[in-house]
Amino acid sequence: MNIVFRKNPQLHDITASQVANKEYVDSSISQDHAYKFMASITGSPAYWEQQKKKVLGMVRQFGIFTLFITLTAAETHWRELLVILKKTVDKEDITEETAGEMSFEEKARLIRTDPITCAQYFDHRFKRFLRLGKMLKMDHLADTGLFTTFTE
Image (cartoon, rainbow, N blue to C red; front, side, top):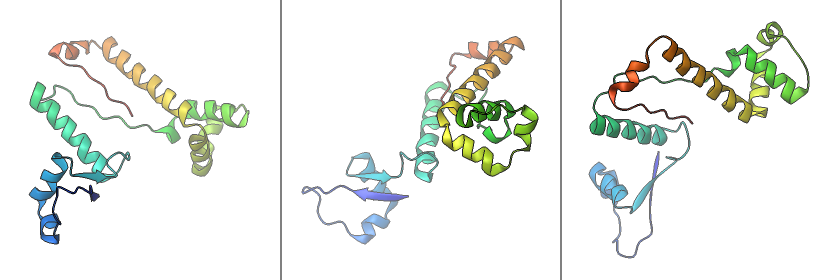
């Protein structure tokens, strides 16, 4: 992660010892005299640090979570999605069995070519997961006061 200091005539020359001082850097960031480069890039260490702070802030405000689940898309393992992508991208009908036999490179090509369909399919699977929780009578967990989802 890189820290970028803003050019500001009110700030005097910054020394190497100040930059090496964590408190000085944190103070500069909180006062908007500096910012973390790459914090907006999903998956970068700065991004995950930012997400961790959001979660810790929620814990501070609402208390410890009753249930916390992190879900990750598994596009290369979802045969139904690969069938949809093959039809959408290559205009070709295939079976789920054929989709399972595709090479990783072919699956990756389809996924990279149509990320919108992949995101919509993940959303569809996530909503099915929530419905399953209601069918299993787990909806009482939502009565704990806060139910939130965050999708990227």
